[in-house]
Image (cartoon, rainbow, N blue to C red; front, top):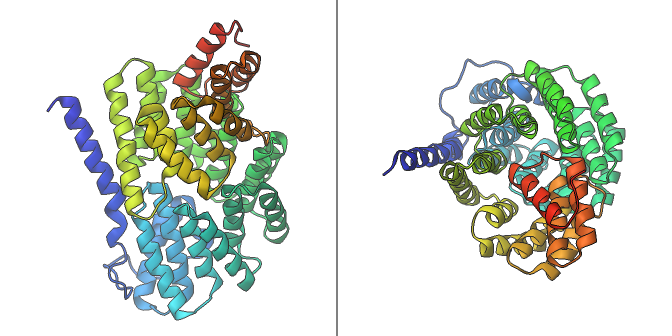
Length: 441
């Protein structure tokens, strides 16, 4: 076995450990646990954000050892496990969340906190119909529940019901204005092409943020929005604000690395993405790291990263997560094209969003079925959402179908919007434009 093969094997084993570490958190189904920190009052649900999360979980577990009939704390613990799963990239924690929420509902059937937690688990597993159903039930019990209001917006967005999502965001803003609602309200506006409104709402959220976790979260959302618009300096400034609030906040580290890569600072970008992947080996940063390696000619290290995505997909599926969208995008560019198409078709049958339309169009394209692909690529860009990868895919499909004028327009739009959206995609877009006789803007 070569040195690189050993390194790849070690990385895969480490990833497996990360993704299975949460399976023993709760102990038995009766709610008994391993010894935790000293007991104390249960933390409020809003104290579990950002850097307080792990400490809050420890406090909740200790509290529940002495107060095992506290249904609200069981619900809060279940929801906290969902957040831990997200921040750690650890889908095994969803089982721990299920057990905590089951306990809460057994103690107090129909309580809104546990139903909202159920909605969060379903959304995390990409069961968005289930998430919407649980969120609706939770809101029937408590129309002002922040978690349920937020998850209802998420579910409607992920089901492609953008008009209903906008109405739900308006309703949530009227009932429970705050950081979780503002950030979702902003994304709904961005999906419909209103970047100015999205930026304004996020600014409002940042003005109202006081906890370090909230500052990091909102500042990163502003940084990601700026990056998607090709404003890398502003993206770096917002990421800096996020990291001053929480130096280890992984989404901010990833956003900063992507902005640095777009500005040509490859060494810093590689170092940043490596630090993220070591702690949170999710498909997004793993693929970004692999593509940076590939762009600089290090094919072996790139393949190591692409193999990690395959491992994550298998472990996610084993823990009840539907990873077909991630599979479709990763396999289309870096793996088995037939697998990509099967996964994209399956996801399209479940939910019809701009993201699934883009994935299906691109999977059809890489399988040589360009005439079928074009309507999906056009649907992906139909809402006004300013996403460079969607425009790139559309432009390449238009070129493949002989629509040269449209292809030039789409590819030029990509490079005006976010010329550093992808080290490989940007290079391919420029090459295609040259072949079409059009210059980059």
